[in-house]
Length: 77
Image 1 (tube, rainbow, N blue to C red):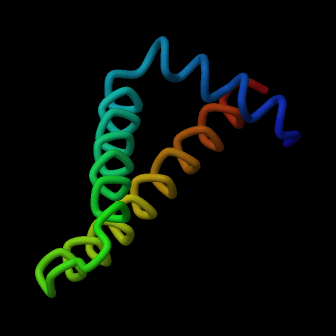
Image 2 (cartoon, rainbow, N blue to C red):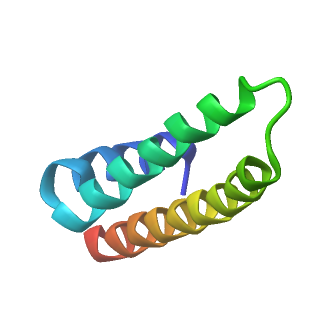
């Protein structure tokens, strides 16, 4: 699947799937918080732990969204 086709399928899912929308919003929220944490010059131990945890959660969401796009593309053929 090409990047353009994948982007198109993702856009279609964003319009049609509440689950995909929910994952996308949560991913954006994690990204926002990670940006906040990265701006700290001397993060506390708790903030460093939170950053590592959020990175893992964000990656998991990205994987879930990619799987949804692949499944959607397979059904669209």
